[in-house]
Image (cartoon, one colour):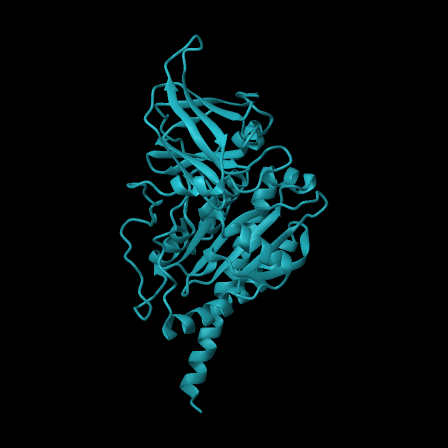
Length: 416
C-alpha cells in the first residue's frame, strides 16, 4: 500500500488556511507513508527528506505506538491516516509542541516492535524510517509499554505578561477597557479530530472559523481576543483551560465539528458543563472529546486530581449559570445562519469547560460526516456568517450582564 502527495482533501485543507500566518519552512519533510503486511509482520515506513533522530515507544489502553522526532513538515495525503494493514488500523501526525513533531500509530491488537531503523538514501534520494511490528500477547506488550524517561508533556501555553489567576483575587477580566474572550479551536497537531466526507480535518475547519470569529469580535472594538492556538499545533485540554484562566478571560468559546455513524445527521449545537449529561449522545460526545489527550499520546500519570474546595465549588456554580445564560442567547443567533440539531442546547462533563471562574461553552458547528454540512463549512460565506452570529451573542451576553449589575447595584442602594 503506497500513499503519496497530493490528495483529494488537500485542496480543502489549503483553502481553509489561506489566511493563516506564514510558518517557517521545516528543515525535514515526511513525504510518504508505506504500509504492508508480510506473513505475521506489518511494516510501517516513513519517507524522509533528511536523516533525523527519532524515539519510539508503545502505550497501552488503547494500544498504540508513538514516534517522536524534531519538528518536520508533512506532505502526506490526509486520507492515508485511515489506511490499515496487519496490526495497524490507522495513524495520526502533527506538531506536538514547538520544535517537536509526533506520529501516533493505532494498533488493532498488542504488537512488539521487532525492528526499528533508518535506511540511508536510496534511488529516490530519501531516507526511510522503518518499523517492523509483530503481534504479541497482552502481558508481554504491557511489560515493555510505558513512558520513557525525558518525554515531556505538551506545555500549557499562555499569553506572555499574564500571571496565574487565583480565586478571590481582583478579577476585572478587562484589558484597556475591553472584555477578554478566549477562542479555543479544538484539536490540532497530532490530534486531527473528526474527518469530513471529502477528507477535511476538523482541526483545520475550526482553526479557520476561530480566526474569523476573532476578526468579528475585534471589529466591534469591545473585546480583546486570545486564541488557545493560531496554527496547527497540539494543545492539551489542561493547557486550553490554563490559557483561559491565566488570561483572566470573561468568556471561553471552544469550537468543534461533530461526526456521526450515519450521514443524515446535521446541524449545530451548543454544550455547557454538567457532570450529569443531558442525554446519551451528549455523554458519548463528552467522553470522545475528553480522550483528546490520550489519543495524542499525552502522559496523564502526573496529572493532579481536581482540587476540592468549597470556594471553587461555589465559583463553578455561578460560572455554570452564566454559561447557560450565554448558551440561551447563542442558540437563536446560530439558528439565523444555519440548521440546528433537534436538541440545540445540551450539557455534559467536558474537561475543556471546567475552569471554575470562566463562563464556557463548546459549540459543535455542524457534522463533517454530512455532505451538506461539510460543503457549507468549507465556504467563506458560512464562516463569516457563523462568526458574526457568535459575536452577536457574545455582545448581547455582556450587555445583559451589565444591565443586571446596574439593577443589582440600584437595588442595593435602595436597601431592604
